[in-house]
Amino acid sequence: MLAQDCARTYRANAILTASPAQLVLVLYDGALGSIAAARQAFDLPARDLSRFSIINRNLNKAHKILGHLQSNLDFKAGEEFAQMMYRLYDYYRRRLLEANVRKDVQPLIEVERLLTEVRDAWATMLRQQGSPVGEPETFSARSA
Image (cartoon, helix red, strand yellow):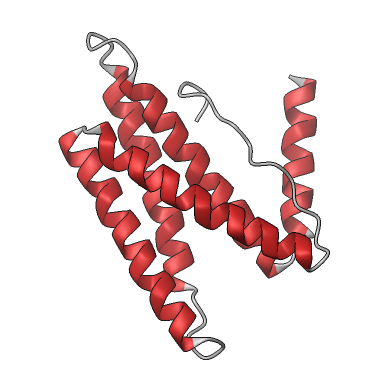
């Protein structure tokens, strides 16, 4: 338990001291972690009824994170980029909703692949600016 508490404190401090650009990366990692946990839950046995709850909870988390990213786009700073990202987040959110309603893993796999590309591009941009960038966290279906 002590190790978990230390890790939680470390993550909280990292978030409190992060720049806005680094917080975007944290949000990407959070969305990807929730997507990964939902995807893993699709692999649980059909008789395990908790899989539906895990899928739903994690897809809702990812959906909310993407909604937060979408609602905080700065259209004044870069209108064309913000419009493109708005449409992209909207697409991701619709596909996650589809995966959740239909309990279909394929839209989830697509969003995970596309969002990973965006996350990695964002991390590269941060590295080029000299910002520290950690590796994305991994989550298990049971822990998320």
